Length: 379
Image (cartoon, rainbow, N blue to C red):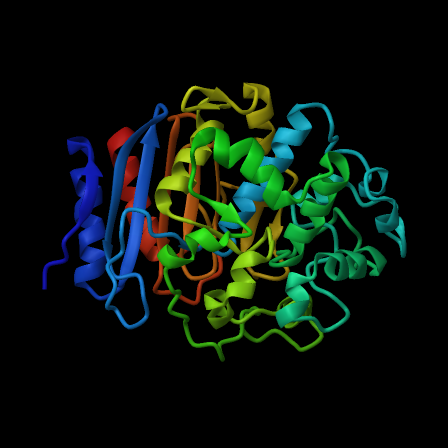
């Protein structure tokens, strides 16, 4: 059965459109969107399929959906903006901005440790899930009181849900605004981008439904012992994918996981980073401020994910597990398959967003295949 592909695609990128169509024809995709920008211009903006679990409602141009950890790229961008304004020093202790955080052996934890998943707070001692995730004060207070699980700065373990509260609270302490509010006012609205961290009620009618993978599949490294960093990371905080369909999940600000957007908004926002800080005629960052994201913080086998990773300032860098051809590439992906990639050398961005979730935590083969087809045009 042939799937109708909607949107626009520069003729140079026909292979991208074909790859996108094959994802549907093979049954890998049910509803999805893909977008690429080059030199600040949108060259691919396509979507197809259905947006609901019953497969009865078409995926529209303005359909948005929870992209899980692709949200982290927006949170990192907010921190880069605050730093570029001279208000945030990544090399400073977190306690400089958030005094309560310095408790329990965390006096020397740096903001850069939060950005690179090396702060020792990949999970929480207290078991939290569900409604707790919507309580900003509870989550940040618990993290401020907790002792790190390892010496900060020495190893990474993916801060799957905690990173958003940690970075978000630093941004809040400096700017006086929640991460979602700062993102909306300083990034999304100036760029006319349809991405939300704390999604308003007026968007509800066009939010797609995620179709979860097997909820019984552990997100910890296979074979991880119950007391391992990996097992503890995903035990608390914990979230079920089905919760993404609830109003409470959408309204909350969970800056590591509950951003709602589509491929267009993700790719067009990150065109800022690919083009020296400017997109759609708006200067959001300086070029030097963009390149801070490329500064390697650590390269190691991540204790939570069990794979080799290089972390820059808030983004992943090319590595054994992410062999991008251009060295000045930054990226991250979300649980289920969404992904955002920024190639500063080629001034290229691309994003894939979908509703049928794979079990992968940071992107999967569908987005990777579309990325390869895209890069083949520009390399």
